[in-house]
Length: 578
Figure 1: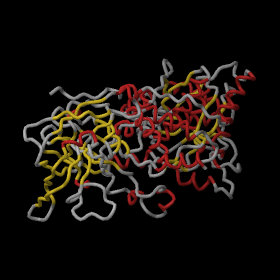
Figure 2: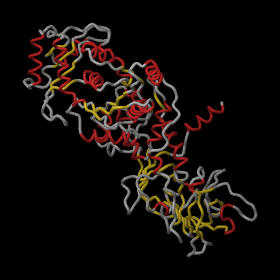
Figure 3: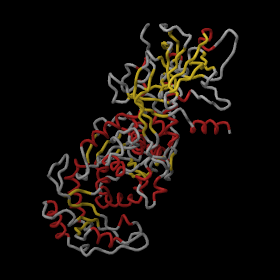
Figure 4: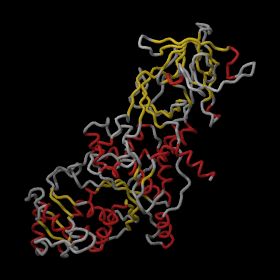
């Protein structure tokens, strides 16, 4: 008997399927108008500026697709810039993971890889320039005092006693801060703007703080580090960004972005805010994701239950499916919650066309066909993918002893139960009709084996007398089955929007204790004996699965990407008919 084969249709999905239909949105309109009016001399330069203090999540994927996608669409460039201004939280591991994620999504920054730390000398000189202009001062209020002086949304702030220090004194203190003469937290440099501003962000924000910590790129050269709001706008200016795309929480910070650039009289990009991605049943906070990793609630940043890009990659999602999802949710000006069902629909839609079908039994129940020859092996022809005839067929061995799903048998079935039961006939997919004749149980009363008979004239699903059966179940040959570990994933959270229900509760209370089920005795058809990491399959009736990196020659490991249930797809079809 020849070794069964399945088509290798998985490799193409990693970088194929780029979205070609681009629905209009306000950022696209802005860029189109800027090109028309020659606002930036026809240039389109965007940037993606992650902080290297954690792994990227699906929300970042939306921002990546937007910033790189707009540059790509309009023939421009997108810079990858690491906002590495806090050495206490940054690690090279995070930098490496971010670069891997961006490349995996299908984007290339080419020679445009930058770090905020590249500009530390220049940023320091800009801070000195603000001091000389009387627009910045050194403040030694404690953090608690500064919060008190800042005021509230309804009450104005109060000026720091240090606000009117002379330029000379501020220059001296700032130099001494740089030289390491003061401990952490003892002094900061603040912009002098307006303590009565209705925008709290403009009430003399901190632009430099003291941190005696070694930096992953600059070592111990610096013990003062610029704040994000100061660094962000000036890095954009230095790199001559045209369209600085940010999520909506930075809208209140845009006046500060503009103020810094205008006061210094430097090149001034345009900051444009868009709604961040909020996804149901997903945690979108790097701080909380880090807590899950550190406290070992998950196996790591790439745990397939995590909403990180690396987690989706390990689960088996394709970059093209995530890019399709990012395009379909669009770009809006108002925050909203996106149903995670849409993301699942995107990967199902792709894998339905590209993933080979196979048969696997996750919870095996033995079947012995008493009237089938003991030593006989037949080859049954199975379709690899009914959506793509070019994927052809494969041969499956059929023998006297088989395994079926435990859930495909019921000893005392209800009406309209069409699977296997005592005296009831079903069709084995691609094979014969069988009828259950005897049920064998263990001492505890559990069904452990079924004895059946088969109709030799029913091969392929038809019989000379023309009878039909309503039930079709899948199976694997006991002698040829491949043992595998299968990991079934559910949502990490038990509620769609934990923030709305959190209140005084810790978000950990909403973790789903059943988010992972490991089945270590699954039996699969022999075509899966030598699978490699990176391959995706549809296990008929179970869902779509991906070969996990834990796979060894001794035992393949499969992650369920998504089930076959598709409530979102049904809603889409219903809307088309309405």
